[in-house]
Length: 282
Image 1 (cartoon, rainbow, N blue to C red):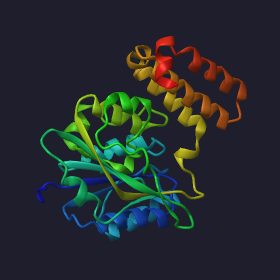
Image 2: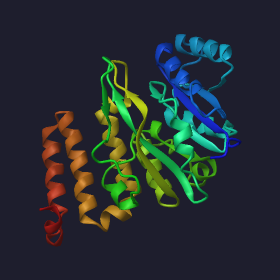
Image 3: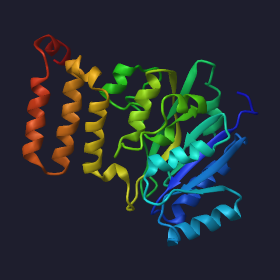
Image 4: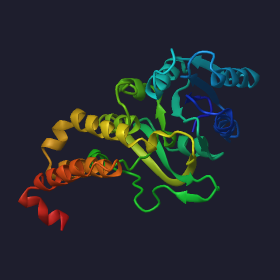
């Protein structure tokens, strides 16, 4: 690990109370790796109560404060932050998540010339502060594109540290993705670069009563559909991949209580399985 290589920590924010944002920022300030910059990208409507509080907080703590036009979305905010970043590495922290103090120090040790991204395990922390592993049983340290297409074993945006050149080489965040933008990014990174995971909890993913994208099943459904369209060449050539993407879509319809569409996609999933694949599943 080379101390001179700076990490740019990009925190997009929208409609989030300063209570949560300040905790996210504080978790960066308490990192054992000291060569970093913090960039907060405000996606709130100009001069909203959120923006005024965030801007004051950033000025007080000498944090770079940037704005979108307002309501542009987290993908746009992250890309704006990346454009202005000066670090060799990029790390994206959502405004309601937190890092453990040694996150950057641990992850940066795993970078080599051929590694484009390093990710880690983490905790889900509920409102009563009960810690739970997010992926303790199915964590994959050295996965491949096929495994990633089956399911997102990497996890949320908070997990990754990415080489800046790698991020721009694969085209940054897709600003047209309604959801699953992290999953889409991981797929495009692993297509071109080596990645490695650390089976050690290094972040907190916070569950609370405020708005979270992970609870918006309609947007998640649109995200998975776009994942399918963008990676159609992989799904069309493999019945197992098609089976699982249809099954994910079916489950999301079930969560929305759209049972006819749920049944429709369950049948699509079953019909996608060729006879030669049945031995793999059962």
